[in-house]
Image (cartoon, rainbow, N blue to C red):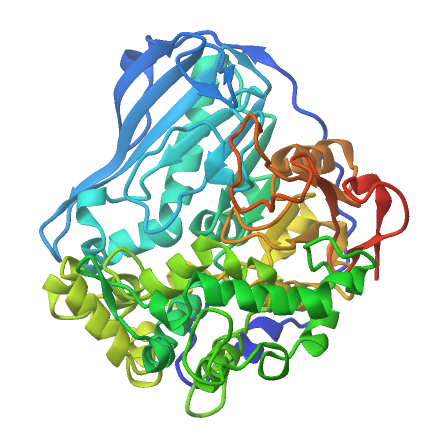
Length: 576
């Protein structure tokens, strides 16, 4: 079901706890995919026929044309095209769903839909690599033999963010591009290999993680495995929440522009965030049994750490070694759930994590919250009904910053969750309600859902993802783990980075679960120190082993140190 939920009046608790009772049906066991060779490539341009589809190029790419982690990608067929070409009756712009497919010569029998990031608009390389999240895969999906598709989600980068003026472009961005492209992609695979894929997967990070979960609900019959990393669950709510905190940052900012661009990082610059990170570690690092620069026990840290008590207070002026009383109040407030005037929860709060020192944390909190590329224009043009009237805000950063600063949670938030005229689906509807019962069909047919989320994510809260999972588990009468599992990544920022062991292979874990029935009891993740083939993570502390490993544990378990080498995952077990 995909009901329009009014605002205000549909509190977050109501939204995510709608459950009822799930029917307990033993799902079937899905078998393994079988390989097949590529039969045709260049011929596809003339022979492939699918409704509303135009192939623009079919080329055989030689081995080594693409590389990943210093290793060549084998030869493959690259196909580009467009679907549903049209001219909008609303804004007069030409739209299409652009796509790229890469079909390996030695195919493993699997299909991967690669999710998009941000507001989309670009057809990125269809290799199933960085777009799937994690801190750099040592072998991407194309190297593993997947047939992979990527898309622009129905609009070009030049149309960002004003594609939100067109209702169909909104729907394509939210969900319809997936539903449109997937049947075509499977038909193209059949034309290229002589058979349809044995197993189909979808994966992505950020907005791509949201797309993966939307596919699990809207297109459950099309996918066997769903990989959602740092997912934007209820993404419009997250954007509204981030905007609502700009006023708070403004009260403690000393400058509001850097190089002519809106920037609020003076509210909590790097040195002061380091003070906060050290205070968190002092109170919470050892709660998991080892002081190692990682806070695994997020739940215990909620009561162990108090910013008012534990962060040094400046006695006179700010000097980078302390926070003022006003700063500490703001810091505490922006980590709390966002509520409207009626007291209803709009979006979850955020856990305190030493990953606050990560530069990406500041990027989302202090720049993306006020600039034209992210939150103001997403909320104003893509999610609001009707869209903001002043179209110049799409390119004028000062206007986007002014919009963010003046944003009123109740007045402007109401437009985000409203319908109006030609905008017949509210933002939550076309971006995904993701209610627990919507996942029943995927479970019934044997599909699996793997979700990973960093606890230092500054834009999509890991607390919100936990709340979503608890609602799913309640609906499944405590049995959600039979088909869906959540793994938290301590210290990881948004999608990657942060002082974390954030290099892991979620796709391989998912395939093993779907096709071999081996549910993941832990996922071993590595630090990306100097010399890592996929590139070093500069947030890894110098006193860590560059190859440190840790187990990621299925929620609600967490990694606790038992005995042995403190740099090795073998020294930890997943416990309560």
